[in-house]
Image (cartoon, rainbow, N blue to C red; front, top):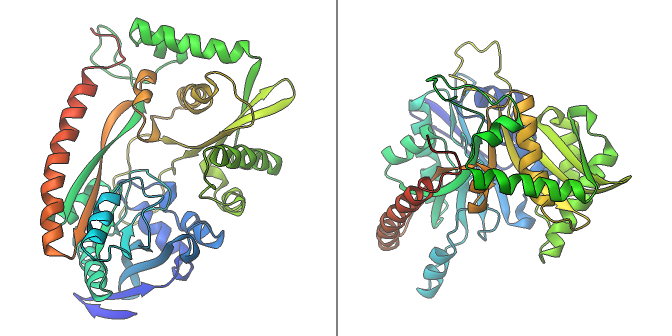
Length: 408
């Protein structure tokens, strides 16, 4: 579908694969909060591998705005007939619609499937193009007679555009670790010099607990090795998927992502992955897969302000054997130690998990934006979000009082 408005040519494509990869990635690189999960290769792998397709309840659409044949703005939209794999929960809204004889599905989400990582969602060359893109997406949703539109884990620029367009804002809490220490007697922050200095920055009880947990894993005879990029061999990817799949199945669910998805990551985005393998003796028993941020892209005519530092994202894990505290070691302590050794500035621990605070991952507010077509339900949801928002603010204040760091 192609429309002409506001000097832009607007297209709605039926597949990620119809977008030109270099143009998409160049636009992503201009954003202030890019992430590897919005790269064309990542979104295409979700589709090609059968992970995010109409069969699994994720029907892709790409909305693009062009001018003079040049891409000005774009976003990935998915038509959904359920709310799985989103991590911003609206099941109660869907139930309320059903109780009143209304259809909540299909709905539209602007998100990365199965990936609760904050970042740019409305890719645009400037604020005006971003506003025009959101206007086009809303018009398309109304034309399709969809119940609602949801932008999940959005960047600040996206939130500003949504607020200006009248969408309702919603907030959740994640836990992120920052590689930053302000030494006693100094006013200048710097990175930690190593894990021991990191531990020394924590309160005594937190320090003791982490040492105990790491000691349990070591005394069980477990060691770790890590590899990145092309150094992650096929046998390592195979092992990882065995662990990942088994852990999902033990919880009664099939994994969201297929083995073919990870094969495409190994082929198309190897530079963005870090794998930890836990071994006991000669036997691998667990694996933790970490995503790595993109380096700044050189050569842009109008480069965006790149985010400071490098980011690691805790994403997937699984185990073939049970070892006390192995999850904490594989998913937190090994990645944090690696980040310190390799100059990474932030580690994002993923959705939810208040237990992460004891490991010095601190609370961070994340944002989503929502539009509901039904006026009465929109009013009800807006009142709910006001109450929920106040609850989130109170929760954050309580968490800040429980800081794991030593008090000056």
